[in-house]
Image (tube, rainbow, N blue to C red; front, side, top):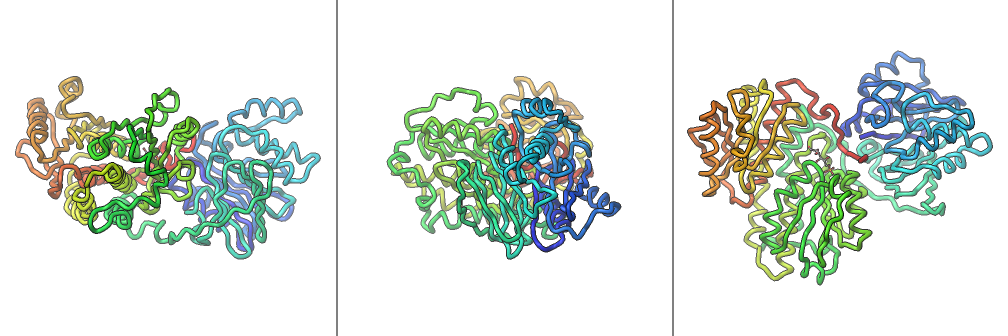
Length: 603
Ligand code: F6R
C-alpha cells in the first residue's frame, strides 16, 4: 500500500526520493509524487501512474533538482479515484504532506475547516491534514502547528510533512509503519527500510503515538504523552542486492527460487542435529502455559491464512489440541469463545496487515496469550504479540507471496513439534525430516521449472480453472487458485476434491481445465484419480501435480517423493511457478498486479 519517503541532508533530495519510491513500488500503488523545499517555496510534481511516469514528468519540469529536503509518496487509492489531483503530496502554499493510512474523522475535520472558509480541492482525506497544519500556522510555528493537527486525527496514519520556512521534516506514526534511517549529516524517513537500505543499515522504528522532528543533524522524538524519548536504533543487515532482482526477470521468480534458502534460514538455528526444537529464547510465554495449551487459534489473511490452514492437521496431531484457523477480517467482528488456555497465533508476512493486527489487539485486550509469526522485523504485529517467531525468509518484494508461505509453514511445523516436545512427546524424527526440506525444495524447483513453463504456454488462454486436492493437498488447491487469480487475472476456484460432485462439477467442460494435486498416499491418491475419471468423462482437461504420474490425465507435473506430512513444502512450488508463467505468457505486471498491495494496512 502507500509508501512514504523523506530526506533531509546534503545530497540532491530528488535522487534519494525517486530511488526510495522505486524501492517502495512493490507495496502496490497507482500514483506517485514528490515535494521539494526549494529556497522559501515548496515545489511539487505528482502524477497518476508509475514512478517512471513521475520521472518523465520531472524531467520535463523546471523543478529545482538541487534541493536537499523533500518528501515523496506512492499512493494506493482509498479516498478518491487514482488521479494526479488525488496523488500525494497534498500541499498548501506553506506546507506539503504525504500520508499512509486512513483518517477516519476527516469529514468532521473538514466541517471545522469549512467553518473557517477553508475548502479542500481533492477527494482525499490526506488533504485535510495539509489544510489543518496550514490553518494552525496562522499563529504557531510549523512544529507546533503539525503537533496540533496530529492531535485532532483519528484513524491510522504515518505522515511526513515539510514547510517552506523550515529545514526539517515533521513526522507522525499511528498504526501505520514509519522508520527513520540514520546516517552522517543526513536523515531519511520511509514506510520501510527497503527505501533507505542503499544509504544506511541503522534505523529507528517509530512507535504508535510518536511524533518526530527530523533534520540532517538532529532527531527529536516525542512519545504519545508528548514526552521526549530516546528510541534506540536497530541494525538491519540487508544488502541492497538482497532487495534487488539478482538476475531474475521478476522478484516473484527470484523469490520462488529462494525458497530452499528461505526455509533453511527459518529452521537452521532452531532445530538441533538430533531433532530438538530450540525455540525457548523466542517463545517467552511461560512454560507452564505452553504445557497446558488446550486450543490454538490462528488468525491471518490471504496466503498467510492458507499457511495456517495447511499446518492445522500437523499442529493438531503433534500438540494434541484443537486448532481453529480464522480469517482476520471476519474474526475481528466475531465474539470468539476462547478456551481456558488458548494460544492466539497471528501470521503475517508484512506484519502490518490491519485485518490481522486488530484481532491480535483484541485478543491481547482479553488477556489471551499471543504469538506472532512474521517476516518483517520490528513490524507492528511482531512487536504487539507476547512472543514473535520471525520467519527469516528475507525481503519478499513481489506482491504475490511465495517464499514467505514456505517459511511460515516451517515455523508452524516447528511450533507443532515444540509444543509436543513440551507436552512430553518425542517428535525428533519428524523435525529431522524438516531439516531435509531445503534440499528437496531446491530439487523440486529444478525439476518443475521447465515443465510448468511449457504447460503455461499451452494453457494461458483458458479463462477458468478448478484446483482440487484432498487432505494436505486441499489448502494447497486454495493457495494455487489464489496465486493464479492474483497475477494472471484468470478465474480459479480451489475445492476439496470430494466436494466436486456437490457443485463444482457443473463447471467442467473442455474450456475449464482442472489442476489436481495428489500425493501417492492411499486411499487419497485413488480417490483423487476417481475425480480425474469424472472430469475426463465430461471432456475436462487435467494437469496432475503428483509424485506418481497417472495415464488418465493430460499432463503430470512430477515432483520428488516426499513424506506425506511434508508435501506442502514441495507441492506448492509448481503451483507458484504455474501461476508465474501463466502471467508471464499473458504479459502482465507480475510483481505488481493490478489492484493489489503488498502490505494491506487498511481495513
Ligand atoms: C497473496 C498475498 C496476500 C497476503 C495477505 C496477507 O499472494 O500476498 O493474500 O498473503 O494480504 O498479508 P500478510 O501476510 O502480509 O499479512
